[in-house]
Length: 323
Image (cartoon, rainbow, N blue to C red; front, top):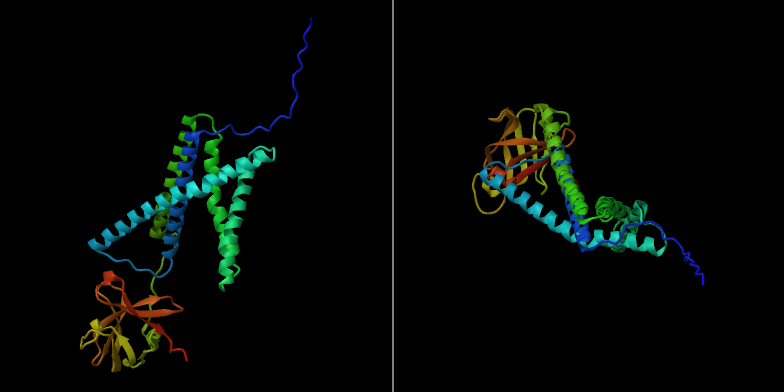
C-alpha cells in the first residue's frame, strides 16, 4: 500500500528574536541600568558646564575639596541606584512590551516597534504627571516637556537593552553589555574634560565679573530687605536701613543690624588684583572690600559673610527699591 505524506501548510510567523532566557534578561537589565546612569551623569555634566557661563563661585581649601569629593561619591552612588531601579521598573518592561505587542499583532519586533513602545510609555508618564500639575495651577507646557524628556531619556536605554536580547548566546549578550557599559560611562567623562579644556583655552567664554569703573558705581544700590546704599560722584556715601549681618557690623551682636549713616567710598584693587569697592560708613562698616558680581547689564556688589568658603554673601543690586 502506498503512503502519501501531506505536509501541513500553515501561516509562517514573522522572523523575530528568539526567546530570551534569564541570563539574557540579566544582561539587558545591566545594560539599561548603565545607560540610564550614564544619561544622568551626562545631564549633570552638561548642567555643570553650562553653569560656568553664569555667575558662580567655588569654595577653596582642604575641607571644601573633601566636600566636593563627598558630593561626587554620593552622586555616583545615587545615579547607580537610580539606574538599576529604573532599568528594572521601566526599561525591561518597555522592551517586553514591544516584544509582546509585536508578536500579538503577528509582526516582527523591530527597532521602530521599540520606539513606539517608548512613545507610549512617555505619553502615559506625561499625562500622569502633567494633568495633575495643570489641575493644581501649573502650565500646560509641563505635558510636552515631560513627554520629550521621558522619550529622549528612555530611547537609548531601551534600544541598547533590546540589542542585547536579540543576540544569540549568553557570552555575546554580556559582551555587548560590557561594550555599552564602557562607552556609556566614558562619554560623560570625555564631555567633562572636553568642556573644561574648551573653557581653559577660551574656546568657550566662561563667566567674568563686570569690571565696573568709578562712574559705573555712582548711584543707588539696594539690598533684598529694602535698604539702600547711595554712592555719590564726589566719593561720599549714604546708607539707609542696610540690614548688615552682625558679623560685619562695627558694634557686633547676635542679630542683623540696621545701618544708616554717611561715609566714603573709592574704587580700588584687591590683593589678588581684581577691582573692588572700598566702603566706610560711620558706625557700620570700616574698610570692607566689596567685590563686583552679576553682569554688565545687572551688576551687583557683595562681600562674604564670615569665611568665604561658606559661599554666604551679602549682596546689593543696582537700582532703587521697587515701589
